[in-house]
Image 1 (cartoon, rainbow, N blue to C red):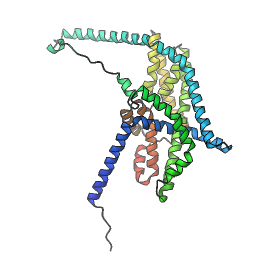
Image 2 (image 1 turned 30 degrees about the vertical axis):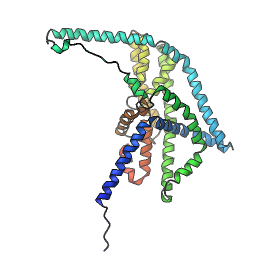
Image 3 (image 1 turned 90 degrees about the vertical axis):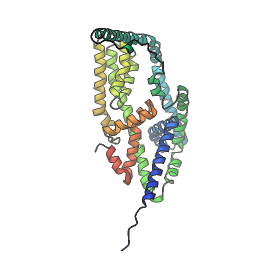
Image 4 (image 1 turned 60 degrees about the horizontal axis):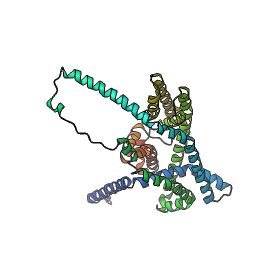
Length: 356
């Protein structure tokens, strides 16, 4: 009776060490080359959305390079029209920023005065320690919000340069899709090429449905929130409505993000609590509608992630890339799950990330 070969413990340990080192190197590259990786991911998301339009034009005998060029030009035209439509409102909003800052300083001063009065009243009961009278030195640091937003891109200049590359990357991805597809499959052994093709197809379908579905959810949410803001005569309602709708799409913290911009505008405008309540209720109800009705219908079951997996991914990618990581956390995790669902040895991990 032949003996079954046993794996050498030293070989297994060395293999595990190599995998750990490879993972560490991978995450190091993702962190230090974050602007490049973010640009590639955004380009892939956009290309996955534009690819069906290119294929439709190919059916009518339009050359693929021309169809790709037309879709990229269409994307740029739509982006320009959107920027042009909100430019005046955005410029007016930034012109009003000094008033908002002054209002926030007034509220902060009132809170500090209240806290000081409470402290003075408690000193009659609890004597102050000698350290309380010592002078304090405060260091001015860069805004933590700016650090969070720029963590993945480095600076505003780097962000501008990155955005300029996206149309070219999208065009090349669409034009050379067939060649890239064949070259990617050739990286795998013949017996695994069908599996690799299934994985790539699953990721492409998931990304396309995720982006298009969320765009429709955001559009419907904006069409509901914006008239509410207009009814209460909120300034910059045409800007605040779509902004609140898009921010409310962020899982779990979307309500807080969506309410914040219109509340800041309301601080400059209202002295009563009624409009603040209307803003909070409107954004919360639309977020509830989007999460429980619109997203399952329009995005579907392809992004089948449980709450724990989404929360961990948002914590990790936002720590790694800041604001961009927070936005890209769900599609990145869903793509990882698509890989796990189509690779036999990784299916338990895909099941752990899924909703069951």
